[in-house]
Length: 436
Image 1 (cartoon, helix red, strand yellow):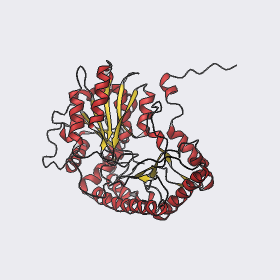
Image 2 (tube, rainbow, N blue to C red; image 1 turned 180 degrees about the vertical axis):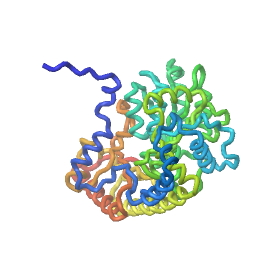
Image 3 (cartoon, helix red, strand yellow; image 1 turned 135 degrees about the vertical axis):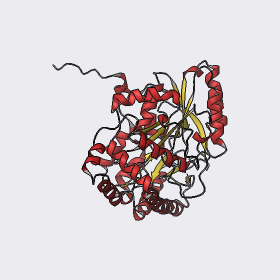
Image 4 (spheres, rainbow, N blue to C red; image 1 turned 60 degrees about the vertical axis):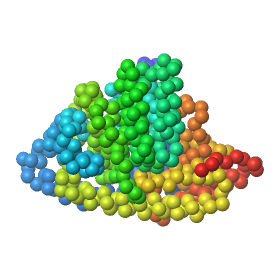
């Protein structure tokens, strides 16, 4: 008889996460066209640019050895200065963000590490995070592992609704739970999964509410800007972070995984000063500095302008794919009643709603029909809501145009429409449908 292995509560809360099941489904259905994978387009990855940059960085042995040595927990100060200048460009700040101390900048292993560190720094079991409904399902898993209580806030085509956020905060105050609210989490641009961006009018209002309800303790607002640079239409609105003039409420998380390379795994965070020590201490426990050489690769491309040229090529490629998916949806789902989808101005995803009678989950008739018969995969929308929320919709799906070619996207949408028709044909007449 072998001794029992006793796992931590955090490990047990992390079991059976959706991302693991999705990866398993991808392996088991390898012959499917995947409209599920949130990976970047392999053809967009900067192989030549990275090779040339590495060759330049390592051409002198003495300088190269320093880059192959450990860095620092927050990233070397000269690199953080380069990243601050880059952020100033996104923020359209001609002063180079000189009023934001470098001590508040963190270079991380993608933005996902920063999201995890923030949760570690702020949450004990039972503490509360408010999120948009729907939201990034991997972050929901991070909150679940921490034992946090996650409260969804109603959203629409303009992002999280300020009046819904206020109602949620008021209800928590009336029930005596407001002191347990630690964080409001939003994806400000082209949200994963919905493709929705928070409107310019709502951005300062969400910040105002976070500050107004910070009664006895600070309620931080985490602005996840992972897709900020993948804009295909229109002009960018100011970030929520830019409205935080006191610099004490908004945590800004950005990543170069989508715009440059997920294999290099470089993220950038800007924190209120009150969080710097706690997050630095926790990061020191994890790695006392993310990959030093990788940070130098991205910094070098930022400094010489080749990064910006690369991002423009990426935008053009994804714009073509986004347009192909929307055209295919217009064509293939024409005449199918009750099916609607959001037309994103950027990012990598299209969010689709089916009639309420058509469930999309892993154990649904549609998922079986799509993966086993029509050979196409999607992400069930119910994953993007807290698992214990009884009102979470069951008739939505996230479709990604990131990995597939234009031809693959068109064929994938055709197969998906066939699967929806097949499932609807098996249902009794008279099922209800949702509005746009």
